[in-house]
Image 1 (cartoon, one colour):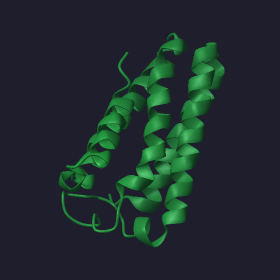
Image 2: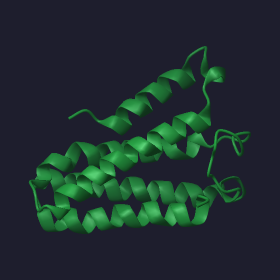
Image 3: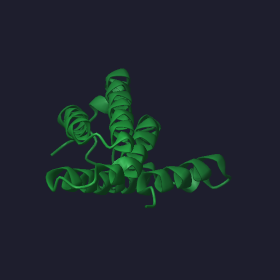
Length: 145
């Protein structure tokens, strides 16, 4: 399985290090990455709901963990408006709180990946809830509806 979020992250990192970094639209990049993360999470939830082979969700969980590490840098000053962003101003007024949730998301996703690798369906189900809670916490505090 291709790591969707990891692929997006690689593209972002390559672009940020290149001469065309100024041409990147951080709003478009973060929206694409968040959509990929949402797809990965939907896949994980579907496997848990179907009581499927949880080892198959390891890559998706790892991709979410990798993406979570990039989330804070994708909200630079100047990207508060435009591009149909739903980002709340609190991202920029409370960057430490925003980063804390991103770190917690990464930690929860890493734990989920480890449980998936071990084939522990009960731990995968519990850790999937933790990942969802971190997503929800961020949306509640930092995303407009």
